[in-house]
Image (cartoon, rainbow, N blue to C red; front, side):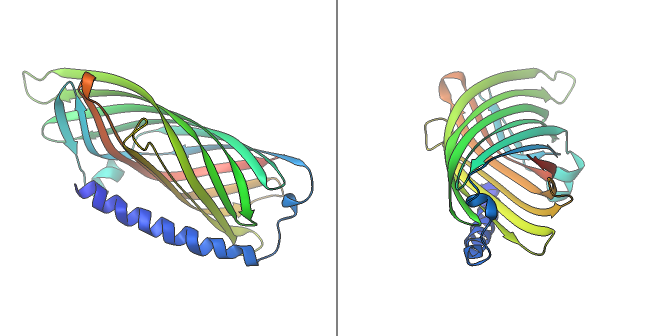
Length: 247
């Protein structure tokens, strides 16, 4: 499937980025790692997401494989909110995501509402490298509106949990700018067959407590419930813009 080949390149690039960002442990130590204080981060952000892949509802499969130009022209709205708590090298956090995704071809219009809630925790093994693990709750409502005068509508909904493991790395570029990348993988058959999330970002420290982040978010999910004739094999991606507030 072309989507897997395309996303395979994305995963390879992110893995290489994370590897080199890990070299940041040779840089200056972050004072928050040793100050014995609790730090709280709140980050509202937006993602305008497009989708590509295959969606199956009630045994009817609709391929959604637009070109990069088509994905950008069909972007819909998403909202995310992230919290983080850290004490020296230990950290924990949550992430809530809603994305309204849509695409169309000569078979049907496809609409998907996707909710995700994530709980993670981990340890900073080096000043600029974190290892993390947790769980992600997924809920998807999908609808097909088939083309033609006798077009019908089919809809379905699914919920499941995925275990996830991953890493996040950040490296300073200057006093105000830094580059970061998060990569995690999950599912492993417990929920999704496989779920992959990647977030390459460029960050700018606006004030002492506010950091703006811009980049791109990718999330690929391969989930199937054969008893309900539902399958979701989709890459969702789009530009990312957020502001982190640290207390």
